[in-house]
Amino acid sequence: MRIKETIFGILLFVTMIIGFFTIYIIVSQTIVNYEKPYLFGAIFIVLGILFGIKLSKRINRDKAIKYDYTLPFYLSIIFVGLLMFSSTICNERLSETSDYKVIVENKDYSQGYRGSSGTYTLYFYIGDERKRLVCSEELGETINRGNEIEIRFHKSKVGFDFITYIEN
Image (tube, rainbow, N blue to C red; front, side, top):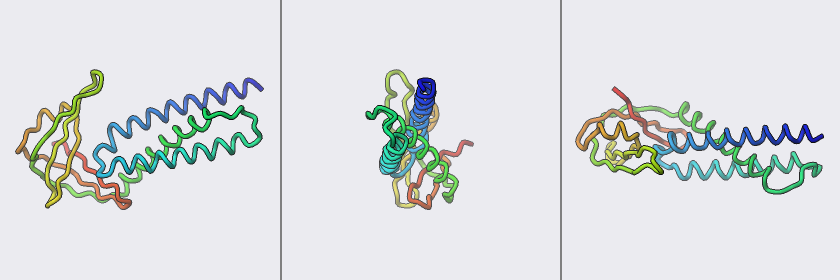
């Protein structure tokens, strides 16, 4: 019986680590250019927590596992990662794209955390709306105010529009 619990614990831990990495990649590289990144994150964090709690109660129906908050925590992280990953892919695939040439009005630099490289935020207008694009330090250093860049605006069917940079 201890072997099953050990294998279950190892699998749970490994999938939780994968969930952490998935969340990190999605947040740091994908949703930073969403128009509503905090709403997107909040929706899928809440859904992931609810799925994790529901599944942990179903798994532990007969109280075979000593109930504490470890199992719901692990499962919630797994579900948050899976939901964020699958929803960003669906959002990207279902969105309609439009390419624009825009002029960079302003740019800001954000220092990286603990030695990591920083990011630049480029500001420009599409029609009358001011938009922003977060890009890497390497790309941001090559673009100056007044430069013309090519961007792709993704109009989402579920309301999470985002912008990507088109490299020449």
